Image (cartoon, rainbow, N blue to C red):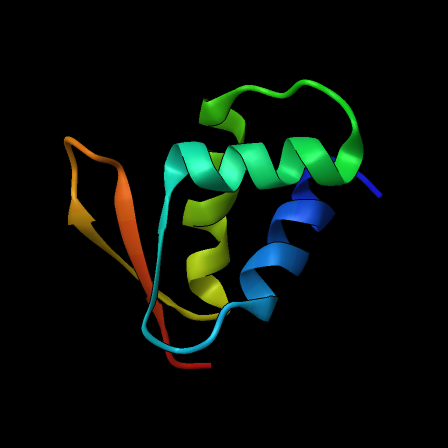
Length: 70
């Protein structure tokens, strides 16, 4: 499994209305893969994930996102 697949798998498991921070998402992916990746990488994959579900940025300074819909 690569970083993109791990990111998508984690986001797929989140219920509607869930909020997740960019750093929190990166830490979850790091634990799942057992390797070090950059926060910007998971944030880029989060933006790509918008094609699957609605992802709304609710706080730019905190890098906080709300995941809704399928």
